[in-house]
Length: 143
Image (cartoon, rainbow, N blue to C red; front, side, top):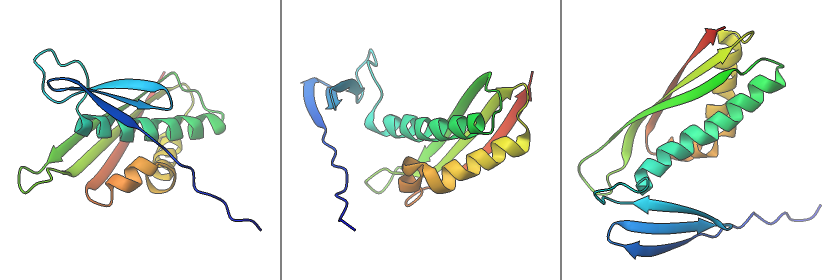
């Protein structure tokens, strides 16, 4: 068996103006805003919350669909707490609330999909879980 090389990633972040930075990964751009009055983008720490909810969303929806269940609507609400001192001001607690609207999915379907995502598949929650208390809940709304 041959040795498999790990996938390499690169990013480039450039200062645009006060409080505004542009980051590019594989040609995809996003604006980070660290405190401008017009709030033109998410801060780096806010991006982490989008990353964990996005990562988990992809997993959960894919798992639900593989179970041949309807996904009428799906949302993940995230709340988090950061410490004030000492630096770095990391997240200490992150709570994700998964809400699925479906014609036929059960609470058990969603709970098992969320559990798989949060404990096995979602790399972002795995990384954040090394320094923060990451918890989650789920709810199915039947239509």
